[in-house]
Image (cartoon, rainbow, N blue to C red):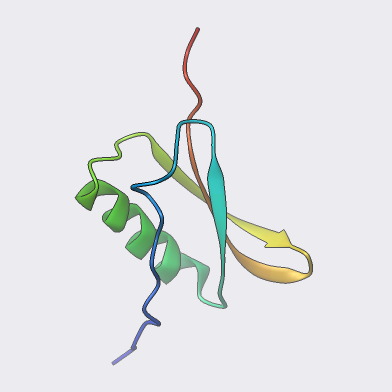
Length: 68
């Protein structure tokens, strides 16, 4: 059984058009957990994509910007 690291996702303070990075090795598991956490905060416009930031592999989570 795989155990995931406890990650605090800042969905409740994130505004539209903003994002955050979570460094990890298992990007699929963190992506799934992060998007499930977004649903718990009623963030329906959450997106995630695997990324490399400052030499670290992880997942970039973001909210879609306002439509004009």
